[in-house]
Image (cartoon, rainbow, N blue to C red; front, side, top):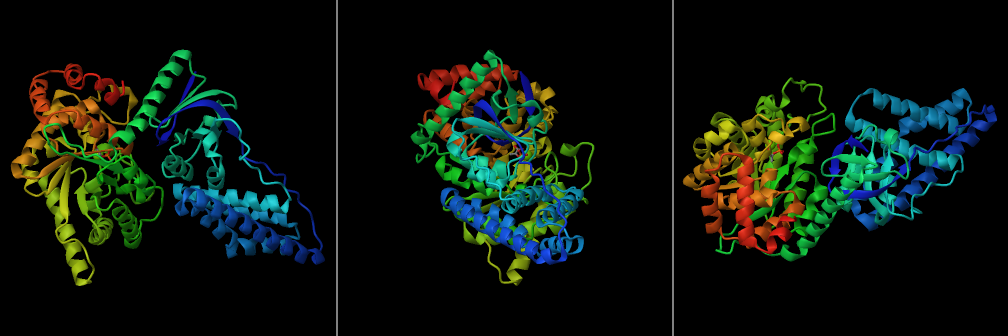
Length: 585
Ligand code: PEP
Ligand code: MG
């Protein structure tokens, strides 16, 4: 068995045989043409481009009908390549000056184009290279009179393994026969990743050596949530994953149970269960899984994988789209949390020794008010159209919070003077994810309308465990007494000041800890959309008063394993026959 690591692009488990898709190779003939032959070759170029445009337009229509307009937009980039005057002039120039046939001229010009982009060493532009290569293969097929290779005839269920899938290939694959995607290249926002997510197909991208290690027919397990690919797994591992797979399938069924129902404990304590989102493709999941709004919108994804920074208008439209689709529920927009493990492709942002402790999130924003204010203005403008709340990440002391609020005030003033609308009473929240913030929560509460506890970071900083390092993963314990004490004191400080407190770290989507958090008095839980139904279900089966008294005893325990064991035992007594179903055991 080989285990390959990649980027977790689309959650879920895929088990099946590998189907290898290689890159289509063309042999490009080079022919010398006479002076008289030039116009004939230029005519063939025009014909080829027109035919390709027609083909793309009809593909675009089909994808738009099947998957929606947003997905069909990927073909616009292809059409732009076909209309690129500089490229077309270059091809014609080669035909005229070098007196070569159109296929040869075309492929030479494309090579030049691609090499220039690759030379720029920019992830965003590299992804554009995929578009260019994809469209150029289409044109060459026309010029060389080759048949379009179709994956439509894929008859059995398989896991697709390839260096990279061209967007048009991904979109036109027969979805019902695809168990997963594994690619050598690509990032979280690559086309394959986006389409896989919206189709609910597990995907691991950026594996780098997938095509070297996997052959068609190999048995594969892909874990799209962990970003792992297991090649020819042992029977033991296979059984383990089969169980996980069935658990996820059960989770999907639970959706129908609690979708439209409120999360209210048996003793009538109402709790808000909302969703975390990163990209617009996840928006339909909010309603599908019955989340009550967005508790964390990680806006940095708009900034990643590009060399430029998004302008105010682009950001405004991105936020507005989310706000409108989530209405009447609220959207908590977190200002950019760049740094840590999420980097900008900008030459001005330095590489650091300890990025998680470095120029990250609010520190970056306060150091670059020019960037920060553009985002604040865009968020404020979107707040005129729905229920928007704003939240600052990585606050470590009240001065940072005050400075961020001062800049927000400046933006409000500017917008007012420009006559632009925004919600004047917009709520401002603080993320509690640094121990110093947790310990001074009483001070921060004076300046905040709400708190959201970011346990993903709070755990890493309070236990000194790098959240991204698998070697110390065993020390990453949400149930550690230190973490529980910090969370408890944050909730108490917030309530003392009369503000509500939520949690948007992964911990809130874990049933066992969710039970504990209800007992600690947490008001809002925000998590990955597919986790929502299970947590709602749990809340509806418990009493706040029971959870509260159990938590009092939990807080006296000394290790994370004691905590988990005790919670399991007590929750089992409460849920009885529902325990296994709700906890998916
Ligand atoms: C967190 O730290 O818990 C959190 C929700 O933020 P992120 O995972 O984006 O750092
Ligand atoms: Mg965080």
